[in-house]
Length: 116
Image 1: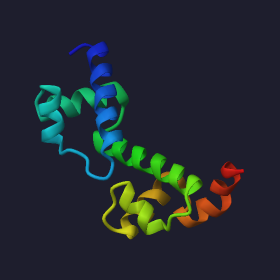
Image 2: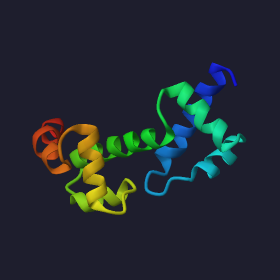
Image 3: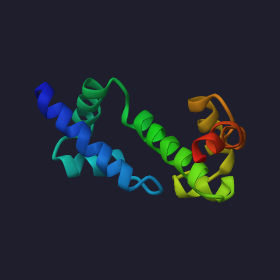
Image 4: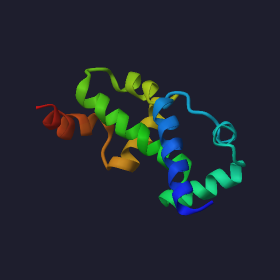
């Protein structure tokens, strides 16, 4: 698959993941939707984006969580469920790894500034 097709595949995968953060499809289901093998899907996605599908899913979840932290007053546990984390502790760990702060601290320090 050439670079243009890899880019197209990556865009489609990102769209599917973005629409299903709380319950994303398995890699096998994604591969079926893209009409490629699981191995080809993962390799082509990494070639196009420089990251794994799992890493991208985490990024998308954290981006959505940041939006919800700014735009809503939902408790952290509810936000973690909305973005696909079954356990708040898993969400908090992923958030801190990606952002450098806990969700509570980010909301208090950075999120409220974005809200205005």
